Length: 305
Ligand SMILES: Cc1cc2nc3c(=O)[nH]c(=O)nc-3n(C[C@H](O)[C@H](O)[C@H](O)COP(=O)(O)OP(=O)(O)OC[C@H]3O[C@@H](n4cnc5c(N)ncnc54)[C@H](O)[C@@H]3O)c2cc1C
Image 1 (tube, helix red, strand yellow):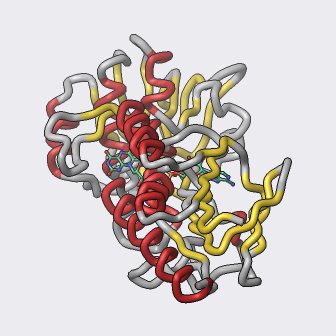
Image 2: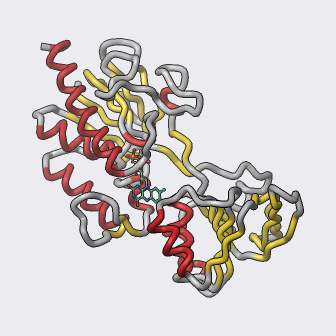
């Protein structure tokens, strides 16, 4: 039996693993895709304290993994398909095996929110993307649209403006939510055109995306916009399937915890974007991970020794 099992190898899970190992815990982390999670899909990170120069997402993710491994964290690249959390001993089920732990840290993170349009799924990868840094390269000298008004949408538009001939930034309000520094950079770019008060109502596509229909939310007028790609950056949804109905969650599905990352289930802790909070960022996910590991360690000392 392990002391602590961590589900998810984004910054929250890897930080939890680093702290757990340094604390002398026998821990194990599961990751179903690649270490670093969303951070690995980010173009440039320039708001993580201590990194004065911007660092690319993949480099940052690789450093996170190396750092956790340096303290001996075992990382298993396997998907967790079920969690049994009601008893004192927690069970973590993959397709191959069941593992046991004294404490569990939920760090499954989040994924981009979709627009919910009828043909969205069908054309994912054929002109619709949720990751500018992953797919931007394919749109060299083409015309693309980005939907959203927060930091991710703004930085996606800036990133894509380096490849695409033209970037339309479609936002449903008349001002951005994103940080001022990113807004200023967007306004400076000659090849970014902002479409205020606009929502995408339809995807126009045959074999691949050819354009979108945009509705002006004020006048209700619709117009066709010819684009080769549509990048959706309208927020996140928590990866909560494993614990749905098993732990307390907010209405939007984020796991509720106290300030020490305790969920309502004893021995189950949460960290990162999966957690209900007001700022879903790398720095808060890292802090959550550190706290979750420390709380899990204290819980084990109190309940298993
Ligand atoms: C494009 C983009 C740009 C961003 N830019 C910035 C930025 O500049 N600065 C900043 O501070 N923040 C930024 N963010 C937000 C930041 O990336 C997140 O807040 C942070 O990565 C959350 O980390 P996490 O570990 O909680 O979750 P995630 O990064 O989502 O990691 C969760 C991990 O869990 C794994 N997982 C899920 N379910 C299972 C399962 N069943 N079994 C095994 N593994 C599982 C996933 O594969 C994933 O790797 C950005 C986000 C995006 C998408």
